[in-house]
Length: 341
Image 1 (cartoon, rainbow, N blue to C red):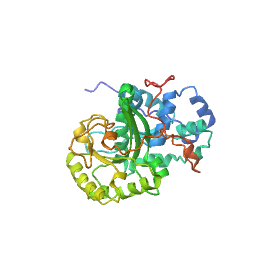
Image 2: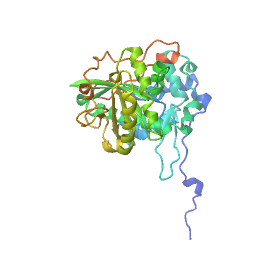
Image 3: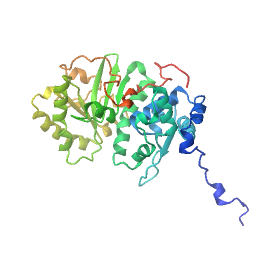
Image 4: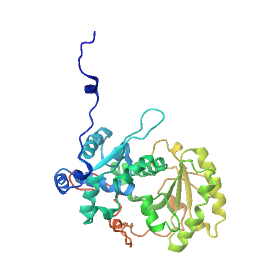
């Protein structure tokens, strides 16, 4: 006999109460958040504005000591409409929670910059629309590449520091008329500093020749800017890397000046969960064929010019949202950061 009279609906987990869209954008709600949001929360808002979507694990890599600690705070930010979330479908198991910027978070960011929320170009429907985007896996993969570097920066800053991380949208804003890299990054260690454009390959561009077709556009960018910036291609498997390298070698040899576009490749399977700063990179035309660390690539290509000061993302432009710089991937609790969470 069943002796527990509790109704089935009472056993289900309740959904957190959240203010409606209009209520979340009111001055009263934003004013209440001023006493609740920490520097880390506002920093995370900027990260999501710049990079669109991050998973729970990636957010934990960026700014929390554990996934559980991140989940506790993310739940509060979700309740306050600072962040929104979704969980995409996967054939087996369950996907991690994916977080995007919500209405209240966009309003806080606009107020910090002295802008109207509409000037940021933010729309909640568009932010949540990435849940159905065919590029969701690509965006998550690209962001994961840099959150792994950021995690090392926060743990062992004296051994490496990610000093710049531009999203695809920001790269497109400045270089989109010629080429649209997946990201731009800069990594610094005591022995040197290295910058690059990232091409994150999911293995979906078939044939692999499509990856090689991007090199002439990078050559044109280097010619027009008089700046030689290496291109790094991150592939999912060793087999895919071999196919991409064949296509890249053919396209690279056809360039008028191959030195303008230094190229190196790596595969995520060989990295085996390690951060991309390790000895995973194989230059396109290197002899001997020996993989090297990220920062050591600058010695492989001695013709690279000395690096200028790291760009701050405040280049010229009429777009008001360009006033919001890309956040440096160091949170307030990092060894080099200050401030209260």
